Image (cartoon, rainbow, N blue to C red; front, side, top):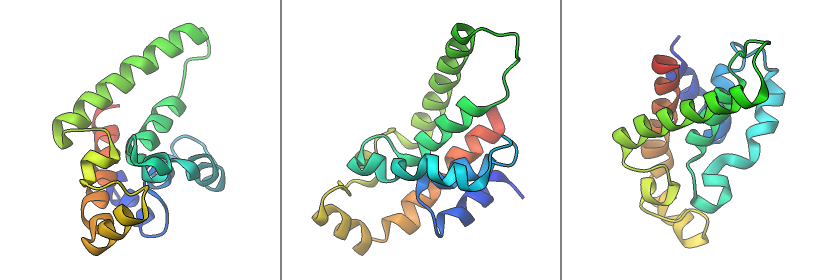
Length: 142
């Protein structure tokens, strides 16, 4: 099964960041409950409708990708910065932004914005696509 499909299934019960990270947990030798706990606070744009949780979940996957043991921390940091930039470029090219507020068109960190998102079914339409897209970008490019 494709990672994007796994991420969509995860999103039925988890937040966007959890859904993306958990879809790669087995490949990363990461315990599922640990993945869920680590990414719990990143959903909904870190509960502030800022950077999309699907994006921050993808950053976690990129950070966890296998590293050659002989590399220094500085080299790993530099490589991950390049990977995050590439991910950002691909995600923005497809969706126009990294920010939850812009992607949804509402600020879900407010009661009014959350209610509007629910009434417009944005979590089941827009967010599910963002979660799938983040997983797909990771699977195809990294």
